[in-house]
Length: 324
Image 1 (cartoon, rainbow, N blue to C red):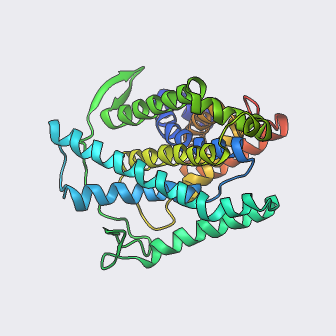
Image 2 (image 1 turned 120 degrees about the horizontal axis):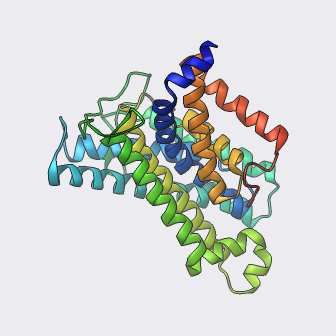
């Protein structure tokens, strides 16, 4: 009864929280599902692509703009626009680099799937420990990295003051939550439209369905693969910016691991390889976490996420919408 009462009392507030966090999961999950759809492999280094977006956002806000307090007007749009733009570019380039050095040589040699998995884990650990070794006294590609050693939160100033905008059934939505949901929905819509309506998007779908036939029809496999990794990286970079805007200071160099694993669970939950399934899976996972927290407490949040994933896969292994 306590569980039912807790969920009932906090239903709309937790629904708001679930949609907000779920939007971030969905954006990260798109990188997993797009790469799987084209190459039939899981890019386990994608959580580090998300981490790069977080670090890039930190760098732009703290080092480039020197923000020390909430911004307003044109300054707010400049800081947010610059931060999300650099985060998207940095994560996109990171994803391309991973594809070029960790996956393409194996793909050209026709290596077995296990080799891709080992290479993905190696790339993930390499990026993690590269950032762990860097501190404020060193630079990487003209970017001075923050000290990501240990678990002390990094100083991330409040760029946007949190203010309630409206309420839904008594649950107030702040400007930060509206920003996260609005940006996520817009970018997911644009990605879906790009894949379904553009020539390059049709090439991605063709390679996902039958790469040999697509190649015979003149589709450049390498171009499609690079585009796929870049788009997934761009979405993860935007998610990194939204993550720090919503939740505050990043904590340490492995900050991308848990959100990345949850996003992978969301991709599987919605249907791995299915773009719309990844979107739906992220939102569902966010809602399950939020309402589960109201029921049994926040300490069970991660456990609930993976228990639901296992339960769904036992009933419907292909995910909610099926594989792409």
